Length: 351
Ligand SMILES: Nc1ncnc2c1ncn2[C@@H]1O[C@H](COP(=O)(O)OP(=O)(O)OP(=O)(O)O)[C@@H](O)[C@H]1O
Ligand SMILES: [Mg+2]
Image (cartoon, rainbow, N blue to C red; front, side, top):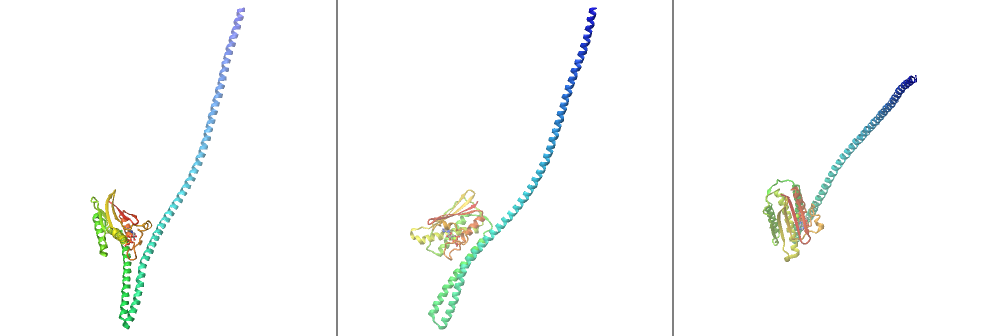
């Protein structure tokens, strides 16, 4: 009986235990489920938040994009405006530049015209004055001849001759100026041809020396040539370059002649010409041991009409013409001088 009771008790407790077990498990499962659901919800929420954030960011980005595009557009308009403005200023600058060049040309043309007018007016004044004096002299001569005073008439005739000589001298001066100017205007004309530079220099030296000797046979100078025979023919306009050589030799002979007048026997005039190769150039150097050129005068010698020679002896166009000829040959004409000692002109011509 006791055993039976115990057995029943045990069964009950077993049932309870089963019930408890199951309820425990259900409880555990439910709590797991709750935890799972809560965590899933949290995850869902997190994803929703993330999505919202993403959308928000997307919106901000779109706004920023619109803003940026607006700014780019603004900037582009600004840049286009600036570009147009720059183009306008460039155009204005070009216009101003061409106007300046034109003005400069007009100014140098004006200067040249003024120079020419001055140079020609001077001998023409002499021509006009002397011819007026001559007319008066002829009137006087006529009245003397009426009274038949031969001696007085002869004196007047002599004066007429002298004034006519002056007229002729100044007329020739004007003629030389015009000829020099015409040579200037012909600088660019003429055909280049292969030329024996040494031969051309030797010929010009002889020609210049003979001209000086013809005017004054007491004049003598030693003419020296130092030619580089390896120099081949050079493409130049021969007449133009010959003109340059003659100008330089004339100046050199003039200078040594002046020094000779001053120093007399103690001085031996020397004019020399040297040719040599220098890189891609041919150098032609004309030197003299004459009066030399002072630094103040040296700056002006290439200017048209600049001369230190007495009226009628120089037009002052020789060196400016020579400079233009050498420039037209894409060469260079340089000078080096020590006053009272010597002068050297060097011509560089492209080989
Ligand atoms: N070798 C030289 N020695 C000294 N002075 C010189 C020499 N060459 C040129 N000059 C100076 O340069 C000046 C200008 O020379 P340029 O040949 O242009 O004219 P010019 O000889 O006076 O006249 P022209 O038109 O007849 O040649 C000369 O008047 C002279 O003062
Ligand atoms: Mg000269």
